[in-house]
Length: 474
Image 1 (tube, rainbow, N blue to C red):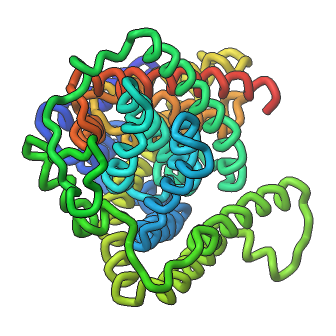
Image 2 (image 1 turned 30 degrees about the vertical axis):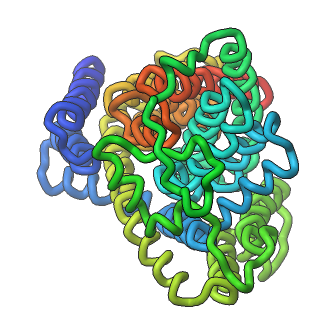
């Protein structure tokens, strides 16, 4: 097949997948597998061979990161059930004060809690966010909503063990330790700079509470939070979503009470230790050090397993085995759809690789790193605007570029971060997170376009810029 035909077929299938997802409302995982099958069939001309390509791609990515995603989601589910997030945010308020707390809040959501399913974490953090907003004056809602949106979206695709970050690392062959280290280096400055830029604008009239905030203010926590003037009850059909994501409303709106409430350091300790193991593994690999039998602890799948077992043990001793089992069951439900989607992304990547498009596109790139990083950012951004899913767009963009990696002089971790950055661009009305953010923080649609769509887009551009700067040294 001619080069132009390969590019045309691949591009046509990608457009068709977007149409199927957006217009026909076909499940994204199904659309990705169909697209992969079509590409593989056109290239191979053989049904059996094309099926082998699709299933092989699915299995390969699952073998590499399937358990990592499952462990990460389960850790997040147990921490959620233990009420760790609510306590953490309240601690940030006490330590940093209301004015500086949004910066710490956003960074903590991204760096410490990316393993928790994004909509669950949003619903859990929103009541405490409203309390924080009430202390920040006229632009309080804008500041907190921006912090939550930017922190959540950056964390899920740029910070391990966020499911998007894990998927990107697996698709592009990025060592997990490298993804941990470089992800933090890019994400933390991205969040702080984005909040600084947006807060500067809000303080100079960009935020209008009369138009950017909803007028529906109903106290849903009057029994224990009567002083929270920003507590709201959604006035739309999303009430049931907020009330039922993951756990009963009480578990999502206040700190779980326990007669043996553990220290936060104890709750988060196992996960932090596991991530330190992963980072240590990257250093060991880079230095070719031989640590003997203990080196198994630094393998990502075993490191995160240690974190899961430790978190489960602490939770069982404090909140009880029954609640831990409930959290684990919820985590398995959440991880199932993530795993299928990630595997479908692997199928697409394998199909695209089978076309030889890597060599074709590689010959079009210069020896500099700027062009490939910009291209993957643009691809992910366009896909996100069409599909509305940060994870899907990042995984798809990375899958397309996976076949090019051997042909261009770019560190795979930079491509992963560029795809992640692009997938953050223009979070809008096709995203469930957009509507949950609007409802749970009492914003109008106009206001949510500012705190979510614009703010996360600013983060997308800043993250791309920082990634390009890193390309000068990596």
